[in-house]
Structure formats: C-alpha cells, structure tokens
Image (cartoon, rainbow, N blue to C red; front, side, top):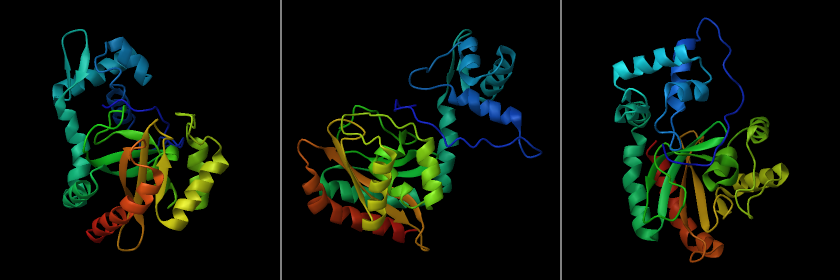
Length: 264
C-alpha cells in the first residue's frame, strides 16, 4: 500500500453479536497489518501488528495463503496481487468511476494539473480515482490511498456534507497534528473552514497537507443532491497561487464535478 500519513478511524467498533463474525474480523486485521512500511513480515510481527496470538495469526495467514492472497518464503509473509481483487470489487460495483474517468482526463488536459476523486471513510478520504500529470507530492498517492480529511480539500468538502453532530464527532476523532507550518490544528478554525466550504460549494487548501502542495475540491452529488464523493485539482504552490486556483481552475473543476454528478 502507498505510504500516507497515519490517521484514525472513527472509534465506534461494532459490538459482537449474532451477526459479528470474529474470525473474519481477525482476518481483516491481519491483511491490514501489511503496509508500505511493513510489506514483508514474520509470523511474530503479524501477530503483534494485528493484536493476535501467534497461533491465531498463523491460522489466518495459512488460510490466506491457501486462498492465494498471501505468499511466504518459509519465514516472511507478504500479500500477493490477488489482494487487489478486494479493492477493485468496490470500484467494479460502482461503475460511475469508469464513466467519470474520461471527464477527469478531459479536465487534466484542460488545466494541466492532476485530478483525483475520493470518498469519505471515517476520518479519512480514500482515493477511488486519480489522473496525474506529473509527480507533485512526496506522498505516494494512488487508488486506495488514505489521507486525513481535516486538512485536505476533498476531505473538507466531504465533511461539509455531514450533519453538524456527525461532523463534530469525526473532528473529535481525527488525529489532528501540524503536518506542515500551514496546517490548521485548532478544531474551531477547521470547523470554520468546513462551514465556509459548505456555503461556497468548494474548498481550497494551501500547503496544509504537504509543503508546496495546493489543491481545490468540489463535491460530486447524486440526483437527490447528496454528496457522495469529491473531485479535486492539485498543483504546486510555487507556480499556481491560490488566486490562480480560484480564478482559472475552479470554474472547469465545478463544471467537471457537475458532469460527473450528472452520471449518477
């Protein structure tokens, strides 16, 4: 998985009951223990990272290996490419993104900047589509990457669509930290920016996630007007100012977001 800043899910774990399959949940814990910083792990490392006993982790790893999702050289375990089937099952179940891709490609060709689409999950945005022009971020971002919602343009657009009590709950659960010298860390200031995004229908974030990175985002809505995703344009702050973003790039972004919305 790509390396991204760590973030936290909204702390509302499901309560075990008749519908809760604990072994399945533990299997997901094992899968999620692998990352860019830990692509190959020993049994002990997997057990420690997933919070399981060695015996429990071993049973799950051997099951995943039998199913083709994990491979091992006898000491180290790693995920196989088959694990992508789980993520692409989401994308294939949402054909909107296949239809949205040409719209995003047309936008990138017009503005000569990268374009991404993301959905909100917990306190994170999760990238579901990306059309890059060239590498502008130190963070390696691709489909499935997660970034904190509180300091990203798409995140603030998506948070702006939540009811106020839900917004406050997610902000309280967010791992707010100064990722750059520009990052807002005061919850009230962040909430104010989110309220501004709600009023104006778009959001610009200037170097809060990463030094030198500026982005502007707009919501993607279904026919009922509900915000389902966000679309953004990102660029380099040293050559694309906030004023240029707003004056020159926002209109085509809003048009592209409306076109994608019309596909829903």
